Length: 424
Image 1 (cartoon, rainbow, N blue to C red):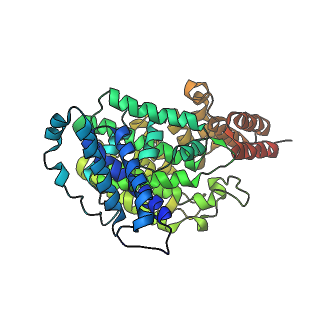
Image 2: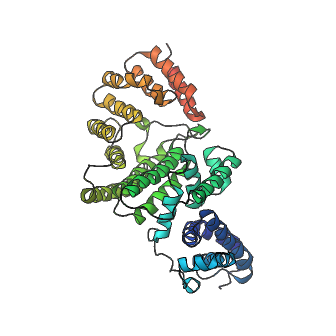
Image 3: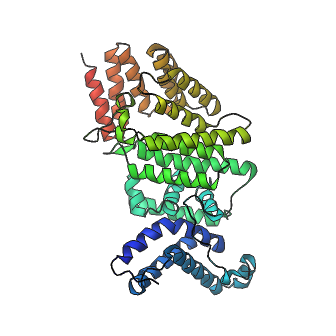
């Protein structure tokens, strides 16, 4: 131990535990085969640190100390179980003498236990809401109150989702493993979807008073970067990372001085983060290189979306954007992953490349699609097209309908402003 009287041991403990808890929980889960129990044992290690470090000093390697303590708690737990002998044979008789691996030299250099934890937390047997809550808890290091604040839901609701998720994984006997073959491809889609949903909620909040929730974007981006390090041969993993890097690069320009939304066409591109754009281009190049050697069906959906984001990043202005290419990319995306939302986005690109009248023809069939019945962006986009065609009264009605559908106060104000601009 190295005494550090000038530092706050409690703050050090909280920081180290938040960074290292995913790896600790993953390693202990491999031993006890239960995520809920593994998290409790990690918390036991945290309590031990809170008791000992202020008295004895912060260890030279705090992460290794926490890992070792949690593993010892796991061994003690197994000893107390009636099935100790059988369990001991399963995990190997040398468990007690196992030395913790050295701390990884970089965030990307993480053993397979963390990858197993990612796939387990995002298992399709759980609902999307449960997967998101459990992933943010176990991998993002967020507390239950933090998750509740991020998604504007009551704390008991989040707590129930997490408890039920752990119980479901245990009762369904979900294996703590990384699947292979077709199962891996199916499960990877669930993992990427969870990270994407977390980012999107931060990038354009569905409800509340704030347009952006930067902390959620940062958590999702961190998870994507970690996953890229864990799965370097998966093109869609790199593609998702590229997409999030490029989207996040615009964050500073997406709000005005009082937090009001700023549309893409009105953004000051000098405020786009060039470092994140460069990281996004690098990740996209990795996705394309990995796809060239592993994919036989062409670019995946995240690769196509990242390529669209790259087109925006390359363009010096909204008007000089390569809209025909973006429209073609959305056509390819619609063929790969059919969706009315993709069609809506394609219509926006077509409106810039061919004109609002052509785009309106794409949108009209979408107005009867049940999936978009309460989707506020449909009347919002339609209102924009009608406004550009000079049909202001119709446009005003669409903007007001969109304002009534959205649950985000900032977006509602923007749409009402656009409606007033269409008034005679």
